[in-house]
Image (cartoon, rainbow over all chains, first blue to last red; front, side, top):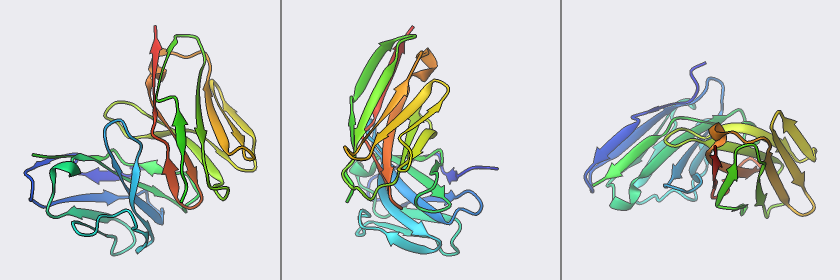
Length: 113
Length: 109
């Protein structure tokens, strides 16, 4: 089993540029999460999908962040335009259902210059 | 929503000693409480979890206790080893996962 796969692992961009992150969850996991993790902090939820439906996006800054999970499998998180404060690790995670074991991907580390 | 508090933020112990990390939660509907270990630059990895119908769970040197009445749960690591050094996160879940702010554990050889 490949686990939760994320790409790219690292991305360096200048402010105001767009950036996109991709996540492929564990096969069969219907719930997918995007978390933001700042250095020394715990993961903070950005958005949660149940299949292709976003069931909780209340913490997603919708003026610049967007996400999609069109076929209920892999997902893309986009930031446009990026700001200096967006520098962080973006973690994707998946589970069979909201109350089951959560498995994280390796994360995408974003640096905005 | 749920609020998870975690203490201490940093913890240093001598190799062989025990380490205890404590978390509290606010939402009585939370029914699943996992603990994650995150080494520098790596993904959080599940090390142990407990559900609300159980008061204690043990896996070798790691144990977790849950007090539903007081809404707190704790991670206990016995006979600590240098490779236990990492950041540990607790979480509370009821369809949604809420994480604590982490405890940086250092085991001194």
